Length: 278
Image (cartoon, rainbow, N blue to C red; front, side, top):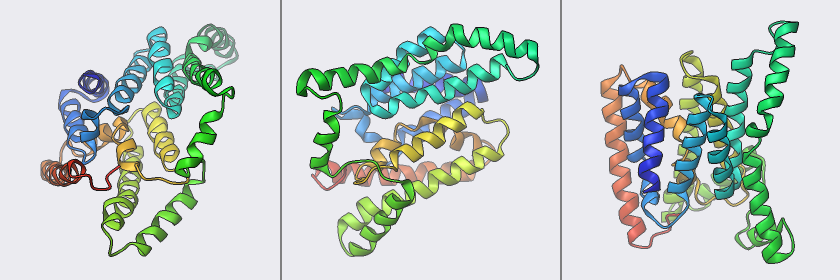
């Protein structure tokens, strides 16, 4: 249910900026993504898609109260949910244009102060999660201790990519080498290229570009990254960019959709048979 409503927000967001054709293809690319089957599991993917897509849609519509509500729910869902502040801030500053003149600076500063609390509402979600940690364990940052069990922690994205490559070399003849480590390297490369191509397309909103970059880097900044594909399934702006880039390239569009469908079937089959797909 969350995934379905989240797709509606993805569609509405893409239609708002690029039209119906791109909006439909955005949902198709998202739904045929090889790890999209996680939206149908009892995990946070569907709810995170719903809350982040809703927050950013309302930010692009400049409906700041609704943005704040969805943003707070997004940050309660996952720590990286707080990143929805990034596109909202870009949209707010681009609308107010406070640096155009002294008068605009004064007017923009006043309006920004009025809206700053709504802009920062996602922090309430983060604060709620920290309060829950304190209530349960007596430490707002207890999750950092619990994550050590999974060897999880922050790490520079460059170091993460290096160790993923090293694990790929060490497991080149093992199923995990190709199912996990090769897939994670390939996905980072593909998503980064899509982001670079979208940056060259001047029709792509800077707010979405900023969020897509921050989301990609944040998810590849974990010390023991086993679920990059699952995390990237919620990176909906990248699927919107892919739809925009292939809008006038039908052969490329069908090739990507077909390739996605094949690997979706492979990974889903592996997952239901208890393979190491995380």
